[in-house]
Image (cartoon, rainbow, N blue to C red; front, side, top):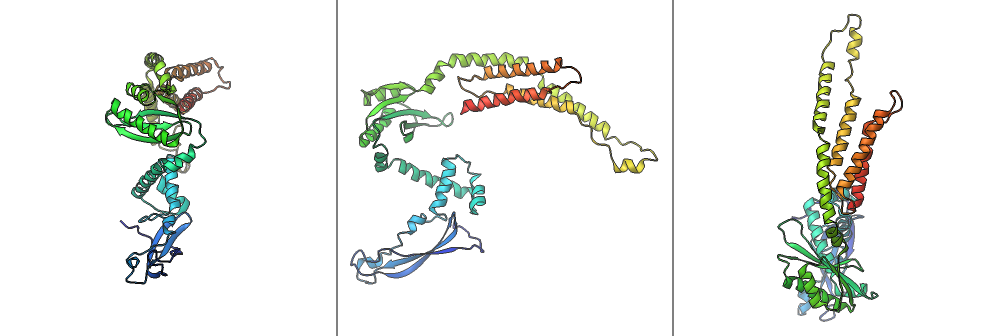
Length: 389
């Protein structure tokens, strides 16, 4: 569907003409035979292109039937697109580099540049950007320029499965330049299929003229046999992440079992919350019960109705329960930061906070339980976030 421009859009007019106006067949000076009007969005504002189309004036020349467009038009925007190259690169950078959700890109684009595009249009532009990006990543000449000063390259292969039951995406990456070479979905990771990908990586390395110094993988049997067959003299090492994860598997299992008794011991949060909410409801109901004002203070009572009863203790209890629930539901982290160990540390801090309140003198400066709970849950969240990074 063609893009609908608002009627009050103010366009900047750009006239484009053919740079070389000599007929490529007979060499005669070409004439302007028609004009093509095109409107595009740019980051500097909407633009209307006036493209002057040329052809040879000699009807007997084969070049008469070939209309030539201005060469600069393709440098401003792709054919049949309502946005320029600058807007396309802006959208692709937000999606591929900043990992911004597609639903957020239209609003930011409209706020920054006043360009209004639908999510469907944004999705189509992103797909075209990804195709061009993949083609550029696999361009042989750019790869040779990139790896020219490199003494050796390090390759790794791994499988990524978006969801259970889907095809595994086998990705071959180069680690010295941190560049994805290629990826291909495989229905079954058989030895023949994997070896075909490794052979393809060998062809790429051969075209670059740079030796392969090391291979890395998770040591699947198909990977081991394929790399040994295609790269017999290249060492094959275990991936650090997979090695550490496999090595720490018994620790993670023990940590998972340790979380069960801790969760069993800290129970009854929902009952406490329900009791506080019932008490609040009862106090609010009693407070809103109409009372007969005194005769002398009728006007004052009507002008100043009683305020709702504030329950500070109940608020603290609800905050405490929410913080403890956050501690119990924290399952993030890797083998270096087990979730059960963080849970034990946080619950220990909560217990110390409660004990300090119990031992504090009445009337003296005391710190509420909710502060201790919130500090403990905040530390757990911070550790979990750093481990995910």
